[in-house]
Amino acid sequence: MSNILHIHPRDNVVVCLEFIAKGETVSLSDGSEVTAVEDIVAGHKMAVSPIEKGRNIIKYGYPIGYATEDIPAGGWVHTHDVKTNLDGILDYKYTPDNEELESKKKLIGSRKAYFNGFVRKDGRVGIRNEIWIIPTVGCVNNIATKLSKVAENYIKGSVDEVIAYNHNYGCSQTGDDQEHTRIILKDLIKHPNAGGVLVIGLGCENSNIDVLKPYLGQFDEDRVKFLVCQDSEDEMEEGLILLKELIDRASEDKREEVDASRLVIGLKCGGSDGFSGITANPLVGRISDRIIECGGTSILTEVPEMFGAETILMNRCKDENTFNDTVSMINGFKDYFTKQGEPIYENPSPGNKAGGITTLEDKSLGCTQKSGGYPVMNVLEYGEVTDASGLNLLCAPGNDLCAATALASSGAQIVLFTTGRGTPFACPVPTLKISSNNVLAEKKKKWIDFNAGQILTGKTFEELTDDLFEQILRVASGEKVKSEIAGFHDMAIWKRGVTL
Image (cartoon, rainbow, N blue to C red):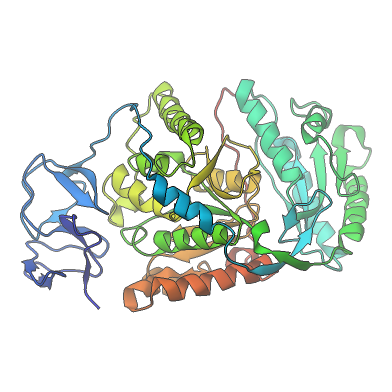
């Protein structure tokens, strides 16, 4: 195996797959050689030819920034000598490859696969049969937690576990901020992975149960129960009675064979490194394609991590209306940054930079590879539940917990989470962690479910796509991921407004 990767023929940099010492010579695919003029750590970039000050740095076949100084062949290319090309809100033009779009559309639903899931009364399919406790306000979080711990003693039949999804919101919020909280709570209450839901309110909060109920519309009253703590003499006693009822009913639910067209997967990355864009993210892109070929749905979010690669997604939109929705989502998010007085394009985290990611274009071009190659079929507002199969784009931030919760709220039954640095978190649905490199997979075996770093040591994308897809079907049929085994469950609502 080579110790460097030249991703695209147009690239004037390579990614170092291992530490390259000063004076070490590496061979390029065209037979030429370049000698490192300084030490370069694994995951970082090395120039393969001299790059003059002001010239673009090309990676993935696209510019990821420009050189702020002359960079010699064999030089380290990173934040000290590269700056982003991105600036401000842009005008966009829809220039699709119509022949490619039509060719891809014909392949949607061309495959068959199956899993064993729980078919709900509303026709949606769950891959878990959990009992969820959803507080309407942070004031009752401790009650929710205590109830979940006690109720674990009553689990039986097909019920997996009882989980309290605590949060700090539901009161002292204004405008759209309060509205978004209500919508996310509504989405989770109606999520098909929950066999039963106990909604706990305090009673005096802005998003109290009476306010929240109209958001639910029609719902299964046997599956959703409510408790207002201020109205109860003993909320623990009453809560446990309701939880026992939910468990008794849900315990009789049975898995049945379901077509993979009913799968909805969320696509997310976090703690990315220089390998994420060449191993884990392209692998997940192939999984997205596989799910869509089965007639299923994938959802890509992290809007700030589309900046710099957004035109690739825009030109894959199924039609001009979808393109316009994508433009509105991108420019709307840039406007959100500007109104908060924050720079639009300063996104890579310290961990990203340490792992070899230099600019937002560098991060975004790697990040958006999770979307695969199929057309963009739908654009979702934050909290909107998808009703379109194929690739969906979702308006949500890059923050891991907020974005993953948003994916679950939009209907994802499982989230595929790629990482180069590692993280133990989970969201309200099974969160399958995919390592971009072998070192992380070996070091954090209790965190990582699948190792895409095997691509660096000889495995093919085709082999790993088959392996990961089969694992996803097993997880959808009940196999637990590492974060579930550890008992980790998190949720986070995107805070966007004034707190009173």
